[in-house]
Image (spheres, rainbow, N blue to C red):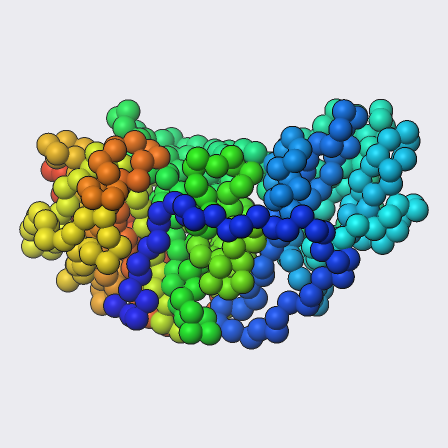
Amino acid sequence: MNSFGFRRRRRVALALVPALAGTLLAALGPAAPARAAEGGDLVIANVLWRVAVGSRPDLMTTNNPAERDQFPVDGQTHYVPKYAGSGRSALYRLHNPNWNGGSDHMDSRTAGEAGFGTEYALGYPYTSQAAGTQPYLRTFNGCTGDHGTRSQNEGPKSCYGDESASYGYAWPRYLNTATSLASLSAGGVTISSNRVTGGALWNWTHNGTQYINNLDYGRQLQSSLFFSRDGVTANPTEAGDTWSNPAWPAYRRHGSPLLALNTDTASKTQSTRSVPIDFVPQNFGGGEQNPAIYRDFQLGKDITLDWGGLGPVARYQTVLNSPALTYPGIEVPTAYLRAEFNRYFTYDAVSQTLTERTNFGQCSDASYFSWTPPNRGGVIIANADLTKAMAVYGANTSQGGSVSEMRMYKFIGGGCGTGTGEFDIASSKFTVLRHGNVGAGEKRFNSWVMTGSVGQIQGWMNTLRSWGAA
């Protein structure tokens, strides 16, 4: 284990950052701090919200939560870089109190366009397309004469058409939508990946049971990694960051931008890629209003259901495209399960030895059971009578596989409570870890995820071992 300890701060962020001051920022914002650090370009972003002002209404963009909360909120439209920098240009918010007979706000890359007054810079979108970004769309209402904006992830509003000028590139968001699911079924299993959270696997349903806990955007079935960046633990996370309290409206939460999602029913494969954000953005100058985006990373999966005709067995291939990294710990993958699943086992598929593990604590990232299959095997988390379980199988790196270590956590009891729902704090967790230096470019790591009774899972792991699955 490296010095980071892989302690997952996967709890709801309860302490709120004070609201931003009501005074608008100066039109020219500060330059981004110069940085040449492990992990490449880390972009602190502003969240842009669209609100409706007045009865007309005037669709207005704001990056100020105090201003946002004064009006009806359509939701998040974009993440846009907060600071000026190479390959970026300012996006201004303009205002004309008497435009087509009413007050109108308009976003523009030109200060003072059409005689509008310039209020402030909303952010600094890219001048050419970066991974996961889309053109920033300004709209015009031919019925009322109002200007607005539109995310690429929403359809046109009535009477509003997209304008043809270029307003730069930003990461589009999903307004006030919490889930936008893409599903695939095969082998008796249905999986659903959530576009809002970078394509992370949101649901795994088998025989009527949905296994995954989704309290915040550090849970799900997904991948993340840990490495040292300027002496601080960096944690790019496929789904999103700690500012994802399920009690908040969706427009306040930070999901990772989605780069790509493809579902192929013929091959029974779903592929997703996110541009991950740091789970704790305040470690790097971000925070509740400012996600920290790893612009040079792509993180996701290729998951194939009914692997080898085994029914509820899927090959889960974690895919990471990144700069070279010094001894990161990569979760390949991790899963948070509903607390109904509260018995913990290791299974050595070579010796065919099943061992129940009970000697680790409750409700603590610091207390877990660590195990490495000496050859091939996995960890199993089951319900009380062992009739339902989720497991992950893999091969040791010494056997050409991806597994350096497996861990199981019990977030049940104590401060975690005992609720068994999808959005309860209580949960169980498994993690497959890959340690060691990685080069630049694309890396792929194999594991196999499955659900069934504990007895069935042992049989499937034996079959995978006999096939030499690594």
